[in-house]
Image (cartoon, rainbow, N blue to C red; front, side, top):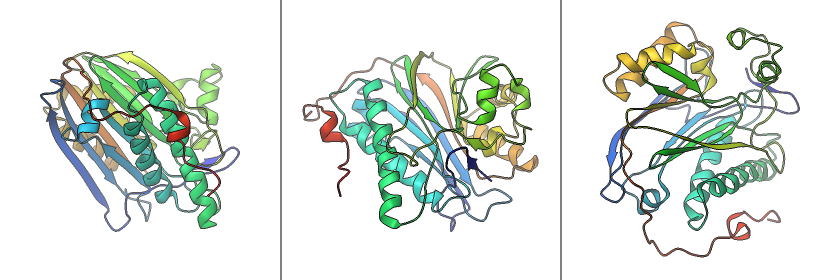
Length: 303
């Protein structure tokens, strides 16, 4: 069960569908990028509803091709109303805003898209009189040999290169803060009694301060996005081992899922696995750009 220091958390794909996956291998003539992708979301063994959400870019969509390859995962707040609504709405708003910000840099797109997703969840909770709704959000945008990351909450992004695994994101939790203060060893996070107490997420306040950054990537790298139902029962180095033993990202996703189920994860299980086969050279497409502005992209707050 998730909880928050100041206020709270739950999440969703539709509870009617206990298992969901999307896979593909995308290569476009526009940017010569080839990225193998696979996503999986499952209710798990304990929860009644799946309150996670995942979203992959459509490589055949002209807006997607112009903006680079975009992927996101969200985990709605357990213990609060409509967590599934929050996670799905946050990803929908994030993707729509990101693609609409066609005159902005990737880092600007992340800032405005995450703020807009936060505002959308916040306003929806007010209109529905649903109490507090919240969700994590972790997203990556791959453009040529750079990956841009936007992150709020305790879902995670990993980079696997050869035999080395790097955790790219910080957990916005009480326990994560103890690790950053060097009060708690990183290996104790998974078993700590307060591991799931969030200090930051989308939807609880009018504004949020996300982590946004960029790092270089190489052909052959594997990227894994996952919710805490996955990483809480799988060690960082095991992601690298499983990646090295898997012939495809579909196989990698399934092996990660099977291991999490075998270890009796008590949460929803969601992940996105990406393997970068050919990063190419990014070229923007002229799709009738409009002048970009924050005012145009932000949803009105007086509705």
